[in-house]
Amino acid sequence: MSPRARPNHAGGRRPLALAGFVLLQALAAVFFLGDAAADVMAAGLSAHLMVEGVVALALVLGVVFGALELRQTLERMREQDIALASARGALGEVIAAQFAAWHLTPAEADVGLLALKGLDVAEIAAARNAAAGTVRAQLARIYAKAGVSGRAQFAAFFVEDLMGEGLPEPGPKAATAAPPGR
Amino acid sequence: MTAPAETGGGPPALWDPIVRLTHWGLALVVLLNAAVTGEGDTAHVWVGYVGLALMAVRLVWGIVGPAEARFSAFPPSPRAALAHLADLAWGRPRAYPSHNPAGAMMAYALWAALAVTIGTGIAITGTGPGARADHDAAFARGDWSVLAHERPFVDDETGELLEDVHEMAANLVLVLVLIHVAGVALESRALGRNLLRPMLAGRRTPAGKP
Image 1: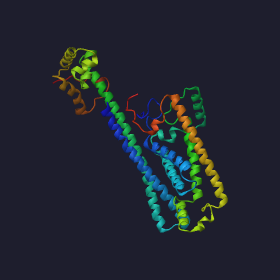
Image 2: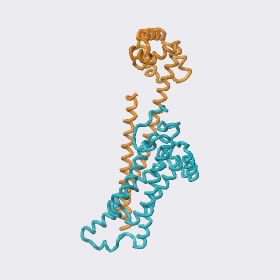
Image 3: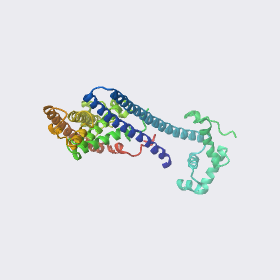
């Protein structure tokens, strides 16, 4: 879990930096505008002030565009979070549907899921309070039902879906996904 | 589409960086100008202008920012604020996606009081953040003529009126800040969730998790 949380955290720094930049620009704009206003009141308009006016305009526009850019960044990050969550959920649904299509028993489905998560036989046995021999036998039945040669091919079965054509539509469609024809 | 930063319909798990930076920036400005800088000295004026910039950014953000930072997410409604306070008194406040109605009124009240404070401050010192510094520099050079007026940029009568308003508004800000802090503490307790942390830092709740 922790390695997944990290990109989120690192992603939080860019908006913060952008926000700091917007604030700094706003500070510059306020001081510059204040100064320019004081000059106008003291000396009236002049060519010099026209130049200052352009600079002030650039600063203000910079603030506004910076703010808009920041809003877009925040929205993009949120969309990515949502997409990631639905991808995780969709993958979970695909796996469950595929297990059902292979007619795995609930116990086998549990073991299969733990195997997909990368636990070895001893760890699965410990997690399920079962003997290592039982787990090994269950894994063998799972591989047989799935028609794969072993753990590596078993995991690859689901990864292939992700790489080939993106995520299949979540829902009942996944249940009809063809079992391995290889 | 629900934003993942929101949890269970409550306020965001983490406010966006502009909201947080302007919030604590203004808090620091108030603290500095109330307790650290001398009344009306150059540093006081500069800190005040920083406050103006922070306010300006927050108000622009209230229009162009993300949903929960926009004014439309927490419209000023005294009636809703009172209803929320009544809920709070009964110990069963509702959670709102942005500021709660009482918190919203507090935000607007604070901004209004700050706007009056900053506005009168600028009027007293004259336009431009450097005006006060120039004045002091002239005095430092030995140009004592600038001392002819205590407030060099407005006539004495207006100046005194402005100073009175400035001081009243500043005191109002301090009173509001105290109520604000007490309100956050009460609400956090009643809701059973820390409302301070989303304004500070910390991780966003991972998407999809309750």
